[in-house]
Image (cartoon, rainbow, N blue to C red; front, side, top):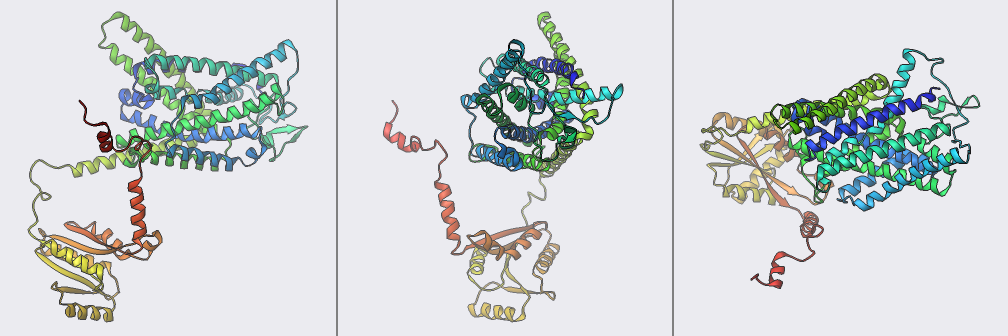
Length: 622
């Protein structure tokens, strides 16, 4: 019921957009390495601020995938009803497709990825121009499909603080238009030289395009009387009756396109498809950003090291899978509803904006303290003023967003940031403690002193090929003491083992431990600990024969006792555990699989053949 305030809210968003664009133009000049907000905050405000920005960015990347794909599905659904009727399933399918593409190492093709963007931008400008022509020249009335509906106000006759609160809430929703501005500062290295200048120019062009399209769509939405509600089932009224849960609310741009071009028209379908594709590509940018940021944080020991390693396709596979899983969970929880998901989105964006711009103010202060050239000082003072205004403005918006959106979902984004921050702090603390414990001291220590003797123990349950191989290996080690160890869980089997041991004349003493409760692990652990107590300077080597099987389900049937023993012995100081594998026939399958993997060549590795053969063909260089 306060739609007539939309132009003023849009104006405030436009001012904010140009402020952020101007601020980030300073960022790309000062930090052309592509570290983005994380590098700016970490360098100028310290590790805690950097970690806060990293937490916000990680949450934002997850939300970028969830919001973009959900919104893309809704736009595509305006042209294809099946898609919007099964939007959770379709959104999950798109997430899976993007994940598989990125795991396969599909490179971004500039021209291929640019085509939907150009089509989208051209389509929106054609829509704005044609709508203006129809309204101003032809004096035609354009009506959105929801123009006949009424909006049921939550409270009648809002005034004073309540109205201000409502307008601020609408403004904070409009601030979602700013998401993505920071992406250019993260991608400066991808630009052609001069990188900083081209990135700054791109930022300005993006800001102009975004503001023009944003304002044009707002005006057309007002003229065509688009009606949108957060909860359309109960807040949208058709002849005084709520539209009900079966009603599907299409996005604003789809409703405006239908009003301007006509439902089912060619241009309407093209714009719906281009919008969906652009949103899917926007989600794909997170598949590039999240794994790279995760890799940087893993290198800084804030995330598990597995996120720092690349897969065989040179993609950060673990980061891609983690991002896809988190985004799919959000899409499932929020039923692929972009209106609800967008409430979570903008919190992290403005946390990054605010800390980044505050960091830039510190950056200019630091350089001004040493710079003597008057011309450079004037430039720095101007840049500092722009960043200071940007920091103040974005902080104000952050407060507005937190106040007006907290109960509408912003708390979820804050909780996600807190969880990321706490987890990364704990991981860094763990890695620091481990590094401190593992550091090699300068002088001699107990770890570098050679043990007095080595006492080897071979575990046997019966005499079979794996046991004989383990005994042969143990003899090769030439330990000071060697013995075989068995646990008596079945007197008949133990008696048979002793008799066969003597019959074969095995020249290794056999020791049998009693186990009244038919346990295997505990008696072995206690015996090994007793050896350590008797001779603390001796090393105990426990040798365990194991079967090697070829199928995953066979692992459930073998080696469980050995696994438990190894797990317990790992926590016993001075004890070395050695597995002696014995390959069963079924392991030949695994061998063939391994051989196939070893013969596989990465894409491009066999274009010209092995280096040695090429050398023979071309002959020695003169």
